[in-house]
Length: 81
Ligand SMILES: [Zn+2]
Image (cartoon, rainbow, N blue to C red; front, side):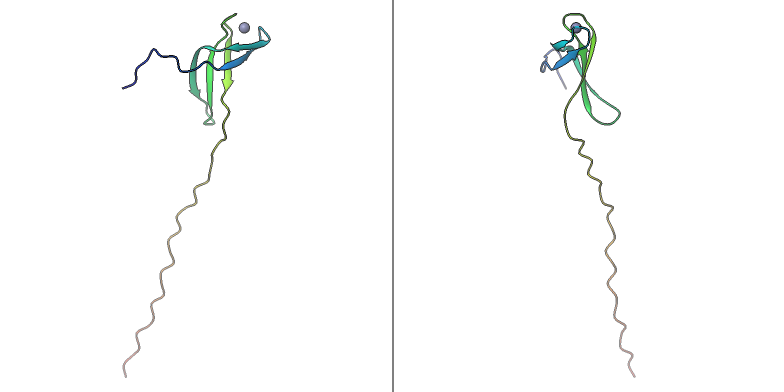
């Protein structure tokens, strides 16, 4: 169970209205469609919605399909004559 009520950290974002860097208040972490994370919150001064995309590499390592090992060739049994 997760407990709520504790602020994790205060990310900074750029407020287009204040034209300045501001702390994002009420920030909530959101995962975008492309899998990246972002913080969505508000400017403490004017209340404009701010959106900060969290840096991070998109670790998209293509998983190689498991190729079945080639079946060992079975030697033909020597025909008994
Ligand atoms: Zn602002």
